[in-house]
Image (tube, rainbow, N blue to C red; front, side, top):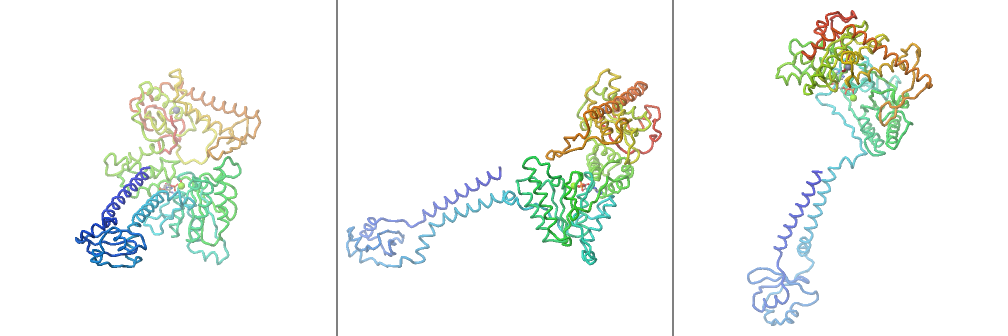
Length: 621
Ligand code: ADP
Ligand code: MG
Ligand code: ZN
């Protein structure tokens, strides 16, 4: 908008300048006389000489000024002057020169002054349009791919050294690096080099980073493009962008074409709804066509990344396309430590700062979370005017990354604080007094993100599998806040709403996905279907009867009401402990694990939960 306004102003300004120039040109022009005036001038003896050029007569006066007189062609000047009554001898006394009318100087004199304004105006219009076009360059070239090619020789190009953990993935990809470096070795043995590699893993596990590292290791160009970019524009643009991207790549082989977030275009086709959807299919088709179009040994390797491999179109996964798959897992404790080390590289750590301890406390964190954690800690330390990052900064950042920043600004009313304290104490005590739960790590009534308070419960180790009994007890823990509010205040608040959502989801999954209900047995119920344009599961295909549906509901109800009963029992029997913990919370706002254990005075029912180093799982509200 501003830019356009500037251009218009510029244009108007330039026009004004041209106008002024023209005005001066006109003033400078030799003045024109009519014949009558010339006749009088001659009679008065003011004319020095005359030069005739076709229809124009240059008049040079005694005082050496010049003027022009126009006459009709074919008429002789002396006759004309005679007609105007100038005596012949006066005419004869003046030297008259006759010159060719078509002389170059004549044309230059006549035409150039007339051309100047046109040249100026056209020049300006041209400049003006060039400016406008510059602005709309993107619009003019939307068929071109926006693929960003990474510089081959940037100093900070990533290599495998910058990627911690994901050992298996790196091993798989080492092969790809070799393909790119010495393709001849493989071709000599008749091996077909794979065309496509699909990186799969949850968000933030380092898929993009790893793809760049492969290019860095092999020292080849890297064409990067995101699936969502393909879909952002007009119909037909996606496909032509794909074509363009591969054209560019072919010229630079060996190289890597990386399509990030391929699920944005590569979702299963055929469940189409609406026009934008067709666009996506065309784009996907074009990707398939391009991948089939080059020879396996041409030196282009297409890498793609997704965190939703389950929704990809099967055509993408066929042999000859993305038939190599590499899975990136969430980092385990050792990987977490080395990821933290990578991101601590240029950050001065104080003596007590233990990355190992930090890794122990962050199960479930992705690489991106850990990178974020280190950064938050650095910011925190800087804001506290420290020269080094201390352990407290690091620990505080864990919660910031997990739950969002503390909101000390949002002050709870006194009664709200009381309710929140009892609510959180309820969660904590129900967790503390069951045999299969994770240890309570921290309780707080400082609001964070959207939660009024929170109780952090963390597993001791990274867990891949969980048992039914753990979930049953988890349901009780989740309802501990609700139960405590009910018992202590005889009423409930909206503070428990997210707990109830979690409980309902968990119970439903137990029944329908994990076969954890006694009566319904080991099968799954319902197929998730997806409506693509929302990218979310909003519709469930029922593959069971109405009768089963009501049984599912009954089972869910049973799990929840058993959990609530258990929670109420525990709280009824430990009212005093709840009071102690909530009073302490009102004073301190936050209780660490050790403080909580001291206040409650009884050891945890789960012997594994005795004080030792915890891992993490969050429980909000
Ligand atoms: P994804 O593409 O899987 O969502 P990214 O590759 O974009 O994840 O990762 C985001 C950031 O997280 C990276 O730039 C890097 O700083 C950090 N990160 C993720 N995984 C790792 C890892 N394994 N080692 C080091 N840093 C990592
Ligand atoms: Mg990514
Ligand atoms: Zn709660």
